[in-house]
Amino acid sequence: MSKIKVAAFSVSMDGFGAGPRQSLEDPLGIRGEELHTWMFQKTDGNSGTGVDNNIVQKSMENIGAWIMGRNMFGPVRGPWPDDEWKGWWGEKPPYHVPVFVLTHHARESFEMKGGTTFHFVTGGIESALEEAKKVANGKDIRIGGGVSTIHQFLRAGYIDEMQLTFSPVFFGSGEHLFSGIDIPALGFNQVEKINGENATHIILKR
Amino acid sequence: MSKIKVAAFSVSMDGFGAGPRQSLEDPLGIRGEELHTWMFQKTDGNSGTGVDNNIVQKSMENIGAWIMGRNMFGPVRGPWPDDEWKGWWGEKPPYHVPVFVLTHHARESFEMKGGTTFHFVTGGIESALEEAKKVANGKDIRIGGGVSTIHQFLRAGYIDEMQLTFSPVFFGSGEHLFSGIDIPALGFNQVEKINGENATHIILKR
Image (cartoon, rainbow over all chains, first blue to last red; front, side, top):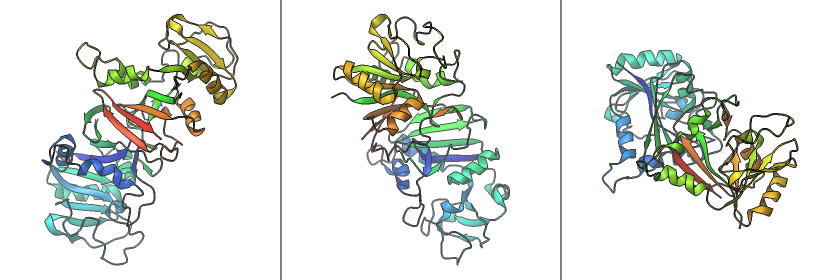
């Protein structure tokens, strides 16, 4: 069965999933990149193994489709002026499966190298889920982010599992993952902690 | 020099320093005790050693005085009906130094076994600090809690160091430590992480 999950989603210790003022220079807002430092550290010499690295690797396994908010896809706001913006990730994005981008503004799908196809969904999260399930082939559907997209899926009760990564940074402002979100009330009552070298990983299940 | 610090203060992963609805039965609010499970686990067999235990032990060292809010001292609200309530901790509280309790209602000081004396301060945090410094003998002054007391000291810029302990639980409601508090803006820009067996310890310094 296709699970719907959040994985390796990084937050600051004070709960922010992005810093303030997202822009072309700061895709995750001011200081946002500090949330992901843990992902890019070789935690066992140069071998690329270690707890943190394993979390990243596992988060990419068995994913049949991604769903993400428009801000995670790019800095363009309002109607698409043209088809120039193709994501933050260069010509070979790290997804390798269909990615459904939530937007209010229609745009043609396009394919990138490595098997990533971006689709644009204007019908909201239900419509994105439906599309994603069609192509996921029974594999999991990963909700990428950002915070407001995760909020929508959480509040609608669609998320089966969340793996959050707490980075040892404090932001003080930005997009707060837990604001207005009551994790136990949403049914996530199983909490597992995994100590990483550079971050603390929490797995939430219902 | 006397440092003013918060130490081993436990919060949930979603930032709550206490659960909702504090009462005689739930001194830390509903489920509040789960924040402190890490303190009471023997983390290295039965030896009482281990990372978490060391954090507790270190948090008690070199403390010359404590300051705490009235709710941390007890469930009584409004004027003291009598002198019956003497704290949550039995006849030998774990402080062993003077403890200054912030309250709007005057009460006589009294001494407990083991060297703990409770004083009641009606003049606010500045007055409590002044009294604490007089008796701390150059040792540190520990701000015990709860959340609203820590907020007052943080906003006034008095806290030199904070060691927070993140317990792998989610509360969804209660008293939020980071709500309205911008840690970096308050000057805490050094963040150290210590992986404990049952919790994650974060040390914040300016």
